[in-house]
Length: 238
Image (cartoon, rainbow, N blue to C red; front, side, top):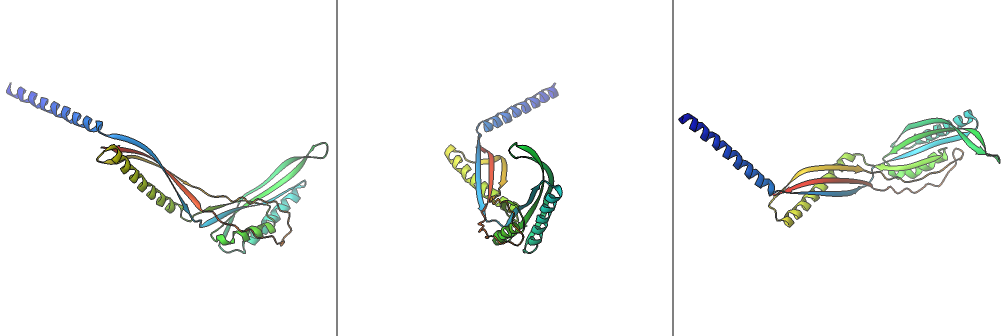
């Protein structure tokens, strides 16, 4: 009988302890204030490299003429690129397509052959961008499809922006803490979305120039690279 009483008393003790603990946790949770904030930070960096998309294009009624013209233009562009320092290039596309064009008074569809090659040029010597453009157009390029600027180590720059952004979030969190009259806070959840943008300078031309013809050199002023980072934050205040 005595043993049963002790067991019963022990069970009651644990039940009361559990109820007391749950009540304490509930009171603590009731005292927590959750605040969701969004934060955005933007930083600009000086460009360290540039990509130029160079196109050699031709469209003629005869397939062999179109193919030969576009290929010669492409080869001339590649040869002139080899004369520049710190320049790499890749042939990103080579396409041959049929195209119908309305011609004459009766607007009759005429078959043409369109041949296009796109060459991606990269350099970290930004002061020679204008000279590169002048030379490739003079040697047969028909389009410059924009210039994009970038960084050699973009992740390093992103991490710096993220670090600055978190510091700003902490400053904002302290302002909210003071406004709410709370003693402390912690970051319960943090979502980060970074964005590495390129600027494009539109320089588009159609060229029927003969090889070696000289053109004015455009003065290219590279734009800074913009890195945006957005944060979604859940703060808990006590």
